[in-house]
Image (cartoon, rainbow over all chains, first blue to last red; front, side):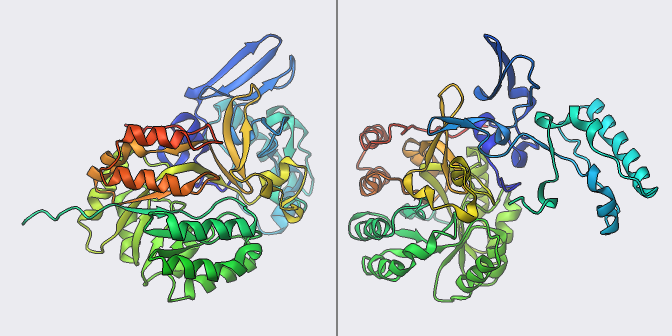
Length: 155
Length: 300
């Protein structure tokens, strides 16, 4: 979704990035046990359903699973986190001198772990080493990460 | 100072957002020209530039018919401009000085600086300062963003009334509510396709493709790169309140139902010939979409 021009959160919860500085606000999130499955809801709408033991994600609206034509899928975006740790040397060579870490609507423990990992990776890159992104796997959405637009195939 | 007599409210038919077969679109506009009591008709592609080549050959005749019927024609610009070709097309549209163009992103706003134009509902306006800025640059008509609550509409209408540069305000009162636009095509993705090779699958859904939650609750509608509400917004019951705020124009967004009947119902309510409740009943009978509902304005 084009950012700053998306009203999905507004429609589902009455609160939005442009009006309230929040998307899919925690105040409107509910997790419900339905038999063996755990269901995540936003503003009363079911956003995803998780099998027992599966990693449970936050119900961000555009990363939900929905049904069209009888088939359920992650229709807008795969639940995944951008993670450039694996290409830090290339970014540095391209002239990047600052990195932005998402912190809004994230817990302090999450931010601490991500920032610490990136500090280590930056120091490693300065020594000419490359760290893989493995240690952050537990913190990524859906247990997966992506290089997003930095990967040519993304469209 | 004697109070000005209120100008009669005007109706705008918004741009067709969905991918209809070209002949069907042409015939739709021919009928609107002849039968629909609307003052203004927006044409042009707002959602996906890949659709335009199919119906572009018909547009000159559509414009001729609409203008011959006494309707003002507004040329709506694309809401999300991404490619070099789209930039060129936008620049050409903005440079056509005999056209009244509706900007739907800030690129178009920049290109239209200094000449009379309209601002569409995809341009973010959340305060009086932004409205005044756009009015100073030549915005004569502004269709306000779908997200604004009633209180914000009232504040903007009050501000517009005292602005040096006159600007007319419009609010969408009928049709699915556009909620998001993306560089990627959800319609194609749902069929396992990419936008580059989409096979124009969006053509199969003339009101958009229904999207339900995992437990079967209707939620949204997919229209190519655009996401809309599942429900059809219908503010026929709020027209009097919006008029009282100073909103002078109302937008009807085309859906695959009898839009002439929709326009007649709204016109009749605005003219005091039909009660809003009777209009609601009439609109609910227009099926096949059963999702017609009255969206109450949030009173935040």
